[in-house]
Image 1 (cartoon, rainbow over the protein chains, first blue to last red):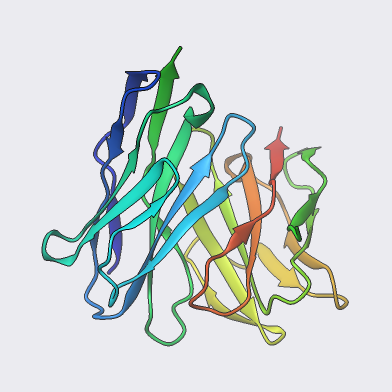
Image 2 (image 1 turned 60 degrees about the horizontal axis):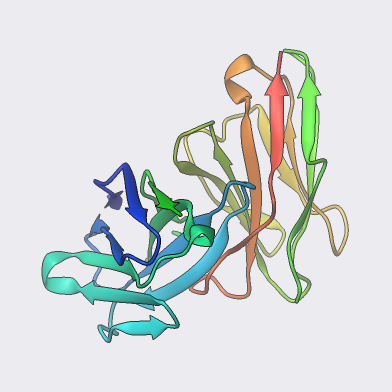
Amino acid sequence: AQKVTQAQTEISVVEKEDVTLDCVYETRDTTYYLFWYKQPPSGELVFLIRRNSFDEQNEISGRYSWNFQKSTSSFNFTITASQVVDSAVYFCALRESNFGNEKLTFGTGTRLTIIP
Amino acid sequence: EPEVTQTPSHQVTQMGQEVILRCVPISNHLYFYWYRQILGQKVEFLVSFYNNEISEKSEIFDDQFSVERPDGSNFTLKIRSTKLEDSAMYFCASSEAEEYEQYFGPGTRLTVT
């Protein structure tokens, strides 16, 4: 069964600090997909990134970077030089690739507060 | 930029009443989903829909729930007889292919009194 664990329930950092959000997943599939979504105070879910299990390259997009490590089943998300607009709940999600399994399994989310 | 839209943004209903939540997925997407999020909790999968039929559903999606794509653009979730515990934010999502990212709508907040 697939499972996503986000052990950090809440994190607060001062603006301009770097912050890393942890995500650990469990799956029996050898092929799977990992995602990060942002949920700002307005409530919508905003897609940030998708990663395939066969691509372990880290990715950087502006101030955001993602570290995917299959050896530790982790897909961590780092925000560099945080800004107040980064304040949100961040969800990590997993999708297995077996036929008929299309659902995203979400973690419980990490509430990030950036203090000005 | 294309986006998923949902109506209404907020629905208040009495226990036992039927509600229909509406969604317009992104136009070239083929896979459609409903999720729900009880206040302060994680997002939970309800159902996925492809090629005019349900392709997967969770234990939450019991006989009280149904989905439909009545025309080429809308995708609806019906709850036949609402219960207090159905109060949640309901998100519609769509994706171009099953392995691609799912794009979510802004959600419908359902309050059952």
